[in-house]
Image (cartoon, rainbow, N blue to C red; front, side, top):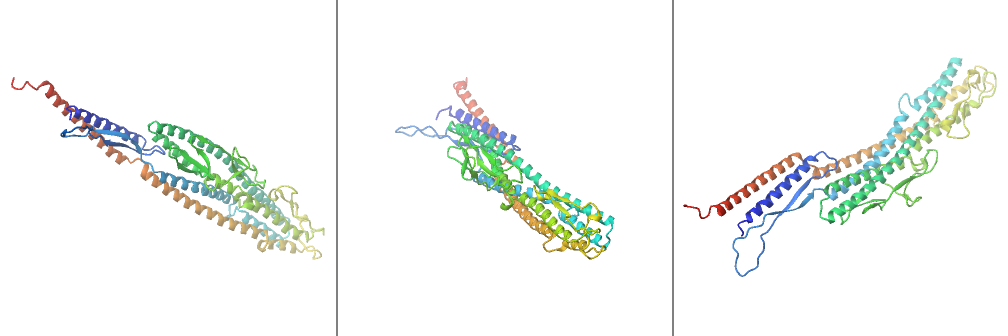
Length: 468
């Protein structure tokens, strides 16, 4: 064993301790960096140089410590679990958010809801039947105009929400395409770094953040390949493979009135739908679907149209059977536009009491039985109020179901992220201990170096001088 071997051992220990402090400092510096995964120094002892010979060489001590690399303490299984959980969370969050917004716009069951205004409309007819005076007639006409306006406003709210969500989908797809391109670029950089023996931990962290974003938005699933690249798939087809990526696009209508379904497709294969069962885009496609496919907003719009049509038909049928105070046959009370949505085309025809057909033919000028029959539509089994109430009840149940699923998916996502972070996030106390450990190791290695240096100084400069 060489006299100078101790210097080499101490030098390797100094280098390892210094590298350990640097890695620990990197962890501490990024304790609050989103997506950062803690790192640890990998080191191993260096064995003594091997020699061949017939005779024993005596005592043989190792040659110090070697730094093997810097390990990223992430877990691919936990990362994949987080992506799956975020995909489900994004899907149900989009559905529940849209449904809750639509439900809030309906304002049911409150005094500002359509059901309350329908009740006020029927009550006005009842009051008019009891006191057929101009003031009561004006209340009926005013309530009717308010009712027609509220139906139109409710329909417009559904249409506006549909258009806003449709525009948001275009923005989300653009973000997905940019993120996919960035993942492909990072894949190339990571592969190059790993093949050349360089570290790629920070690049992998950046890629994981983007992959989670893609899972949340479009439900992408991922798999880490043998060369270190991450393959992301949508509907079983690669969105990102190696250092190349594909782009997506939204095809379909841009207005709720168009009874077509929105589809997600590859830009290089237009017209071929991509089945998206996760992510916020998947949820939005379901929300914007036609009513026949269970689309949330189309169902709301159809309910307003159906209520407007049922209201006009039910009231007009009874009103036409009566006669006015002048003996003229009753006409339509409500008018529906020949084209366009019924909810927007509903209007009130009469403008005064003498145009209201309150009496049954031949019953006399003071008869108000027709007005009384119209007021009973409030409780008719197939009347407009019952139809609207039935829709509101069913829609409320559906919204509650979406909200419950969204809450469950959110809890699963939170649990998955917590599991990932408990394994990969930086712990300040742990890093402080590691820093002290490496600092102590550095001081001890320096002391070894000093001791060997002093021994060599004695050997070189003082041997032979003793006793002189």
